[in-house]
Image (cartoon, rainbow over all chains, first blue to last red; front, side, top):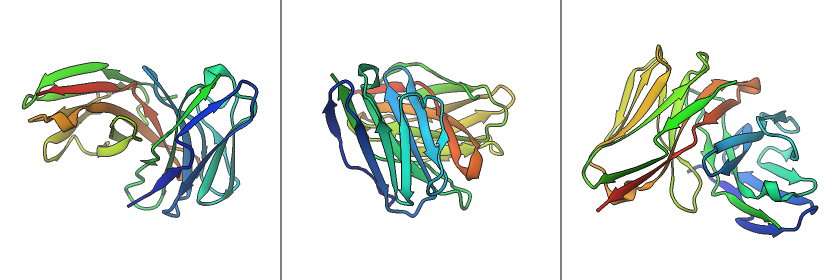
Length: 114
Length: 115
């Protein structure tokens, strides 16, 4: 089974703090994603990466950055956390090979900024 | 870009009845339409998907239909059970840079199956 692991399930941070959300996948997938989930808004794409050291902005990149130094690891960074970034963050991965190209999600990281 | 609308936002059905969730999409280039189920405290899990060259797909009690002309697709769950209670998300996808398939999600439907 594909495993996407988000190391921190619940975090509470103060406004202005730098926050790192880490994600690791064990299926050698080329593509990795960070989504944000808010009630009534569904899942919105923040950033994605299709290869090591490559990154592309999604629909809501403002206030976020990402890092992909190794194929299996994709980090989301909040340079200066704000209260409107309180949300659930979902990491996902997929492989472009074959017909499936299924996107697999992690369990989510609940971030509260106070 | 793509826009996906999902209805209803909440749905309650009696155990054993059917449930239908509907989605519309805007980008005619979208060619892949997955449905995800999210249980409380967990990440979304793929339950069924359909590609644009197929009009209907079925897997046991769940089925998905696609109308490309009208740009809408639906999830049908028959003989619902309490364990079907969850939030369901539809999504539409086209292929982006580096073959990364980007999903645009609907806003979700909270399905409650009443015993």
